[in-house]
Image (tube, rainbow, N blue to C red; front, top):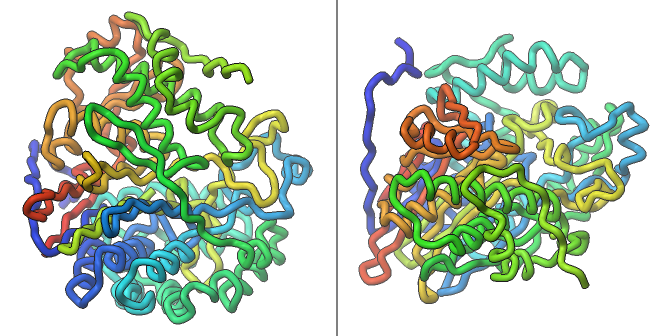
Length: 534
């Protein structure tokens, strides 16, 4: 039977619970989080367990060698964690160009940056967890040792990656990827059991050492040896120097709700900028082509400016405060007319993955995201460890005049972003939509669906999405209403209808009733999503 053939429209309902909830893109990972919660852990322990499990049960989107961000609500305060790693100290535009590249390559050794995921788990556990990191990683270790059957969307992307990699990853440094993820000379099939003993051993060591082995011990040595053998830039000294950063989240008030994101170097700012611009344009109308037009135009302006200005804060040519100001929003809103535009970056003022939500009965909530960036990442897997290294450095520029030019020890513009919603100082809950440059667009659409149209969390995720690509090109889902697509075309948008929904992001939401403590969760219908409740 064809597990990807679903000919009939389906409908999911919002999931409710009282004691705890985890929402993510893989059922086994969600269950891992609930298992840890039932064993005495809180929402943060559950998130760590879920995140670790996701490196095993969804390696097509994330891994131990990726980066992570989190927004954590504990004791009526929101905390932000930026665990994105910098470029290796030895890299530079000149060093990359000397290898024959005119721009940053997508795969291989060059775009690998310092992984932040293990450090994020250890830091979250240290600051907010009730259980040890070793305990939180037990379900993931079990999945890696015993194996698990592939789910449909996971199998789809695994097979697609193998089909691409087998013809392009021909150099010797890629052998670890095939040994780990195609051990039988092919991608595993949907429903087939896959295990990764090396991955399990790595998780055990991370748990036993609170991730220190990864950055300064035996695991770091394995990474360093591999990089030296294949003349990569990443070195043990880069790993040893890394520390996650606790940051103050940034927000904007959208129609009475505060929407929170991680500050730069992340692209969460783009969602806030777009909400501010859109808010300047008047009241939204349900299923209105004019409202969709204004949303798309606001997003493309915010995105164009975000790509032009966002990088490490000290390297940005414009401040975060200005990009979130009413002055900026009003100036950009005035440029939106009746027809689609080709966006140009804002004139500077004189003088800028996998996702999970978890919540517990104590009121703790976490919005967490981690990623290897593009699918499996760089294609580089450290042999017999299960560590697939990210290709986050592909977003760096080699132009010395660009704010995001690569430099040793510098973090790049980052796509992965967790979101959080509060109202009048009280937590509403965590939300997020994974998927490269779709992420701020997904955040924007989920927030407007929730606040403007009062959609429940499942409906807010299920609503057909649009995705601005470049210029006047807008991709819409197959289920996007045709009459709206036609109306947007008449406004000058170049509408393209996608054949499936794979590129439109995968989100999760958990809202908490402040009076009763009841949790309401929605999960993504575009993937193998699940809400585990207790």
